[in-house]
Image (cartoon, rainbow, N blue to C red; front, side, top):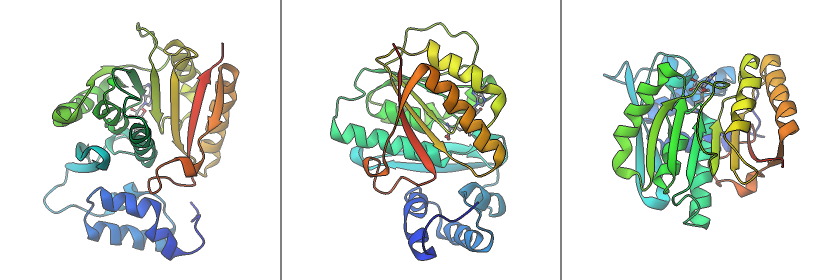
Length: 266
Ligand SMILES: C[S@@+](CC[C@H](N)C(=O)[O-])C[C@H]1O[C@@H](n2cnc3c(N)ncnc32)[C@H](O)[C@@H]1O
C-alpha cells in the first residue's frame, strides 16, 4: 500500500484519522495505528485492531458511528476474529456519510423510499439510510444475517424508517419489486462473483433506481483486475458517473475510495 498524501502530518490530520477519532476509537489505538502506518505503510484500521486489544474486550468490540445531523450515534457489534464482514469498512463510512450529505441537502430524500443494500456486513450503510427515513432491506450471506439482525436491534430506536435483514446471495433469485435505492460498499474483492452480483443489480433496479456504489481501490493485481472486470460488465447495463470528492463529505472521503452513481440503461 502507498501513502497518497504529500506529508505525514497532513495524512494523520486528515480523512481517515479524523474518521477514526469520530468513531471513539481510543487514543492508544489511533497512536498505534499511526505508528503502524509510519513503520509499514499499512493503510487499514483493521490491521491496527488485529495487533491491539481493547482492554477487557476480546471478542465483541463495539464500534460507534456518529450522524451529527440528527444527533445519533449508531452502535455496531463487531468481532475481533472473523471473515470480511466482521468490521465496518472505510468504503461504508464514506457512503454512509454521503447519504447524510444528501439528507442534509434535502430532508425528504429517503422518506418512505425503498432501499436495498447488498453485502451489508455489519449494516452501517443500510442503517444510516433507515435513520433518514428509508424502508431498508439489508442483505448478506446466510451466515452473516444473524449479526446484521443484532445490529438492527441494537439501533432500532434511532430508525425513522424501517430496517430488516434477509439472506441474499448474489445471483440467486430474490422476489421483490424494484427498489428506489440500491446501495453497496466494498463488495468488489473477488472475481468469481462479479457476474452474479451484476445479475442481482439488474434484477433489483429500474432506470429510476438511484444506485450508489462505494469501493476502496486496492493495489494488488487481483483487486485491480476484479474491479476492472466489474466496471466493464456494469457499463454494459448501467451508465456510471463518478461522484467527485468535493461533492462528498468534507472529512469522510478518501482519494482511494471511489463513489459511483449508476443508472440502469433503458
Ligand atoms: C468487504 S465486506 C463489506 C461489508 C460492508 N458493506 C462494509 O463495507 O462494511 C463484503 C460483504 O459482502 C458479503 N458477500 C460476499 N460475497 C457475497 C455473495 N456472494 N452474496 C452476498 N453477499 C456477499 C460479505 O459477507 C461481506 O459482508
